[in-house]
Length: 195
Image 1: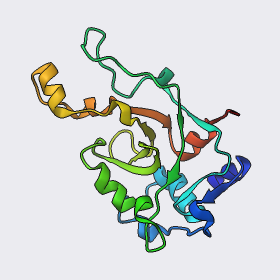
Image 2: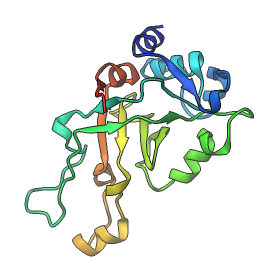
Image 3: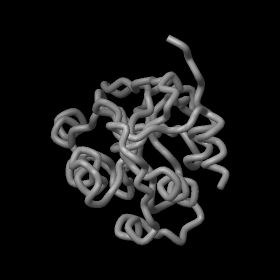
């Protein structure tokens, strides 16, 4: 598995609380996405090898955004709303699913918590102090990995007040930053920055 080799080259992963790894089966993950889609193979391979409640052992790796740090949806230059540029981001801990996972690291719990906060067709797969890493599970961006920035979270009421109309679905990408064409690409583009 290419993702396993890359993760090991990056220094491996550890599980929260120094617990043993608890790999997740594709059967468990089939509740959340189509496990037969090749677009998800790196993500599913990661979970099969390492499971959830895991994070990179070398914590100084930073995510690198595509598009010079611009979000996936940019407001026009004459808009009253500024586009927030982010060049790098933190990578936190993967969610898991099953009895051995704490509620805070449960994928089903994360889905409930993020309902109506992330665009439709996205699955939150990782948590980092408020921000999330999301996997697109349907549509033209399927398989791509995005950084969801909580400091620029959209609000449909504010949008209506500013523009006098209902917020279109594509505008909900204003705080979503492409960080990988798939999980392998996301990890491969990360930069090690010693602090």
